[in-house]
Length: 283
Image 1 (cartoon, helix red, strand yellow):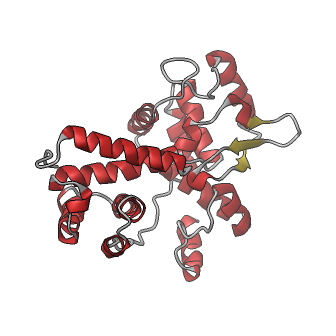
Image 2: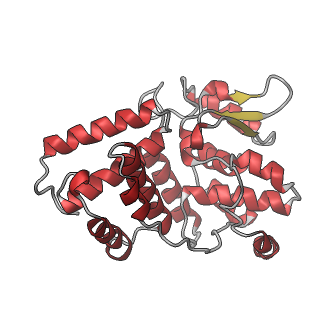
């Protein structure tokens, strides 16, 4: 993207700081704050103007750049559009322009899913016990990346005879519980004994601080390379695997929806009529 032209770096910094504060006061999640602020920052740098001076055609050019020159995924562009719409509606109170910013057309590709055998290869390729445990929890509990990174030791609940993980202020600032595999518990306890984490279940370079997103992405990349798996992989695919394997094992769709923390499971099944074909795909 281009450097700022008419808009000074200081002016842009002040704008983004003010926006960040407004989002935080509005009780938005940390990831939403990051995404929305980034969307406005990149727009300002691309056009070189204050948002109040930017016209819809310039926003369209910016989104075109993202999609057809930067090759951003439609889900990424959708988040950017949501951030821009929020800014124009809530900061500039320009609802007419906000409504004109187009959402990208959703792509209906089926998610990549690993077989149980491929998952075993992936986990066995992790020599580091912490990295292996992180990947296993992403899969066995259906966690999002940030949910895993923000897990605290106290969020692992086993003292009431029920094996659960408490997820605090996840997407949409919602709390929920998800499953903790009883079979995984001995390995989790072994990890805890070896690593002795503080506060967060998975510490970063300093104990008491969470591991970075880059750290877990690197761990996955190394495990995929060593395992020999040829499919395009990212951390979210492990969550897809959790959903598909739960369905294979006969879990009720409503129960799965609650464990995933979705208002609906349209993320996996955009149309009810597609469920049967997806089930065949997952088998």
